[in-house]
Length: 302
Image (cartoon, rainbow, N blue to C red; front, side):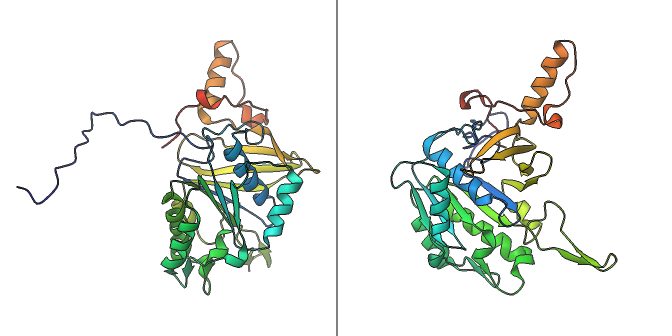
């Protein structure tokens, strides 16, 4: 009698069953990360609240992106400001969700996950307990959960923090949304002035990109006087960008351009060619798009 279990068998010719679809197609993977980085006050918190509302109600995000499932519970973990900020934004945006479905953990209850490069397991386990039953967990912002001299520019603690956040969310079967600040400007001695980091430089290190499933950069869009989420990374087919209009009264966004995946762009171009004229890429023109319903969307899991 063998002391070991039977050999696992998964032959290469045996097709694997399809994985679950993205919770928000092309944006938030099922049990995946979505990291949104941008400068302070660009509106990352507004987007996070809109994501929470969409997955709790089934309503289309920005009027176009349809969630593939409704989650029973979202946990929003704040690391800075005061919980009254989120409450006031939520009220101003006029968002409505089922009672006791969105829980805000205030900054007064903040627990550092990584200190001087070391994981604080008790704090991670505390958050994991608090997030039980969640379908989505939101951390705002990333750097508030790391402490120590210079850790924001050190790849080891920042990646450890993201991994801990993943343990908290994925251990509960939830997807994870993380908001992050842009890196601080660096001084260029040749030009004698401070310069902003490259567009996609997340505060902390480039190792952040390797640790997440999806990474989008949010910025004000001078072209449209709106806002733009530009894809840096997504494991699967995803739009190059989302262009958003913000209602000045409600602060809610609507999708005005972008939002088309590469598969959808290729399909449009093939159809245009079939009709006798190759159309220009829709996203290059900033053309509005209408995403298909969730039932029509392919499985984008990588």
